[in-house]
Every structure is written in structure tokens, then in C-alpha cells.
Image (cartoon, rainbow, N blue to C red; front, side, top):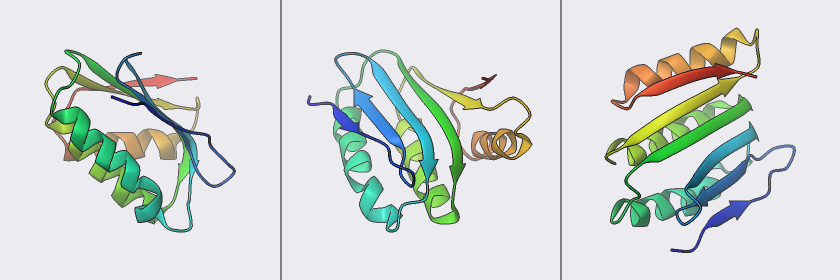
Length: 120
């Protein structure tokens, strides 16, 4: 399965979804002009990945900021991984960034996947 690697910009996150390398990460800022269009290939890739996932999938989320439109699409991403066995979300946030910590906690309440919170 071909990996997805999207280089982040000021308005879009860096995304790496690599089954072979067992690396799954979203990092940076997410406020694309058209969030649905931006996240469409990510959701499509996750649908394909779900047909034959790795035994363990750790999705690292290191977002500094995301807008409301991205919030909905991030929830869609999390729902896609929710169906996988052996999945875990590692939610990173800057030390002292209460807003991003709370955002992660809210996502953790909405899906049934183990979340781990780490500061950096």
C-alpha cells in the first residue's frame, strides 16, 4: 500500500500515513481553505488501510491549531481509525496549551479508542 506524505504549509498539516514503515502522523496547523477536499485522500487511504491494517496502529497527532472545519474532518479521521483493532491515539500538545489539551480530551470522549496525552 502506497504511503501518503503531505508536506505541511502555514495553513495545512504535515500528514504521513505509512503502513510499511508503521508511521501515522498529523502535525502542524490545520486551517485549509477547503477542509473536506484536503482531508479526502486521507479518509480514502484510511478506508483502504482498514481492509488490511497493521496489528498495531499508533496515530500521532501533534497539531498546534485547527479551525472548526478541520475539527469535523479530524473527527472523521478518528472515526475511521476507531474501527481498527490495536489502534491508539497519541495526542501531543505544547506544555501549557490548555486549549489543545482540552480538544484532545473532547475527541477522546467521542470515540472509543485509547488516547495517550503527551506534552512537548
